[in-house]
Length: 272
Image (cartoon, rainbow, N blue to C red; front, side, top):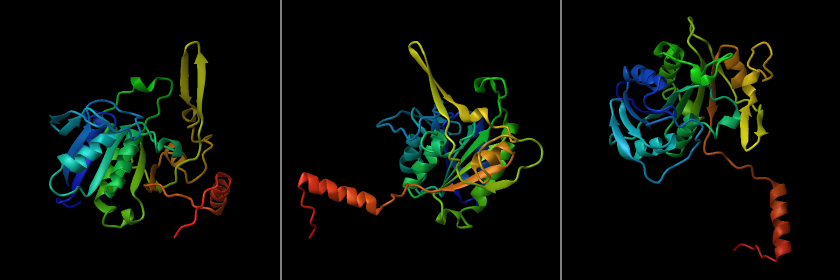
């Protein structure tokens, strides 16, 4: 990684989280890193955007009273040096971001998508944390737990740009296991299509449950080979190359439906 490489680093867990500090320390050894991150936890906020946010100086860079998308817009437009950063890195998120359905929900991934609209390549890094019988809020992570995440993110930041990876992908969704001795192998994956959201009513309250996490046993997981969820459950690093903005699927059936609407409404759709 060249010392001249400019990286904008953000997250959705908040600027004081262990994951962003771990990535900052690792990336700063080889690149000029500017941190612009939310002041507090913004998990699952998607690409929510604000019209005006307060900004504060922080020992790592800048903290915003806003979302990850706010941080990318502010970082790329107002808070970085005169040159546009070469790369945006989001993470490391405490908890995995796996499957198609999280792509519009995760603040970590949404930061990467926001960067894509600026034509800046991005890496979103998240860490799968098996919790067993305790709640996720009870999990305490230390810097050493992020060793896998910092190792692979630093490697991709160092090599993906020069290898031309981002000529074919707008961003990389990277999910890693918790560091546990030997480095894990990388698998290039696609997002799982599995979706098992559920809701239950209890009087005046509704409880929403993401049931996909109930089936992460590598011996029983139903996600097929090649998917991000299976790779992570089996202890590998998942790297999914993804595109943004999303393309449209133009097809004749919809054209025919539009023509029938014009006929019914009496619209002359002739174009000069």
